Image (tube, rainbow over all chains, first blue to last red):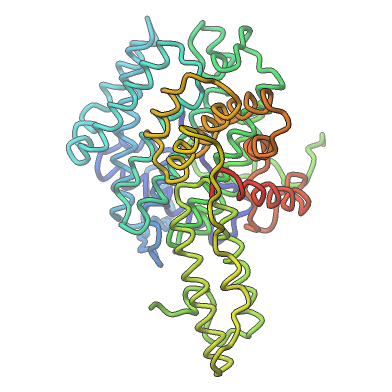
Amino acid sequence: MFGYVTPELPELKVREYQRFRALYCGLCHELGRRYGLRGRMILNYDFVFLAALLAGGEETCAYWLRRCPVHPLRRRCVCAASPALGAAADMSVILTYRKLEDGAEDSRGLKRLGFRLAGAFLRRAYHKAAAARPDFDETVRRELAALYGLEKAGCESLDATADKFAALLASAAEEAGEDARRPLHELLYHVGRIVYIADAWADLGEDFRKGEYNPVAARFGLTDGKPTDEAREAVLATLMGSDRLAAAAFELLPAGYWTPVTENIVYLGIPRMIREVLDGTYRVRKPGLPKEPERLTGGTESEP
Amino acid sequence: MTDPYKTLGIPQNASDEEVKRAYRELAKKYHPDNYVDNPLADLAQEKMKEINEAYDIITKSRKNAAGAQSGYSSGYSSGGSAYQGTGNYAAIRQAINQGNLQYAEQLLNACSARDAEWNFLMGSLNYKRGWLDDARSFFQRACAMDPGNMEYRQALQMASQMNAPYRQTGYGPPAGQGMDMCDMCTAMMCANMMCGGCGR
């Protein structure tokens, strides 16, 4: 479910890319400070976006020069510890752990064992994070329970299932400042919907093979794990509509140091992801800093 | 009152042309048409007010004369609401317009009829809470039951748009995927038409 919310890198100015990278490294270091190496393993792009949103209207960013195990040779600019990074780190631990637990409930055999092991691996970190943010932990527990209830019942409303995940993500807005809270809540709600529905679309084939519930299949009555053109058009309208609403909410957030990065994600990164997911060309972005471009914008790949 | 130049995001020494351009950009962004049926409409309206005030202050202080005109300040007030429908439907419309979605849902669920208007109102309710897929299904049903109704058709059209949010950002739209001005106009027109509908 993670790795869908990324910037459109070629459209970032170099200084904006450097900021994004420093925030990415900053979140990794924050996870390391709070939860050790285990915490660092769950780093993903979606929570970098959350950290940028929570840092919101700040007009500058303090940074440190640090080495890390992955980049031991050169010191890099990493964002210094901040409340926004702390919140993003805690929340990513809580959400990842809760999803692992639910995954274990849901599956059988070796896979279940895998979920259980991964859960055990994160348990200490989780208890620490949950103690720090009991409200968020409770919301995640409640909404995920409601979500799995709907999934078990084979819910046919795509919006009703997406609402649970969206509400869970939206509750992260509580960590933001007074003036940002309402628009941020709205923005995260729509982004949560997009992530949930896009993920369901991407999982269509796999869920069909395993005979598991899939919200998109249930909504459109797909019985062979293959999407119809009608479903594709409807989901495209839904997701782009949600992104337009996310953008409308985004414009009401206070502007600051991180605005160029978050703006890129909302206006370019997410629409690109939506198009790619729907035509089947999207690959979930694995954590790690992009070094080489995956393709040359406007160019065509050819043989030497 | 905060610095009006900061509100418009321009330096004190910006030219009149730059002031006007910044104002227009912002006014476009926070225009009520962009927040039709949006729960944040009040915040956008506040922003709009701030921008109008800032623009007024700057133009007035620059013209250094009483009664200086502010080109746009009165142009964007929202129109009055016109309720249609009878009995319960009027109350439901009102509840949706006021953002009292739970109450509207109760009333709708209590209705015995499942006619075109009921489907339209269910669609509006879902649209307002961001449940776009359900909203479109209800609008489709409303249109199928009453194909001649313009309000239903406009709502369906708005819920079926497939373009990404538009904003000049980065270095311009990525090759071959940008939204052209034509789409933009259509989007604005659709939004405009909805203004007369349930949202206002």
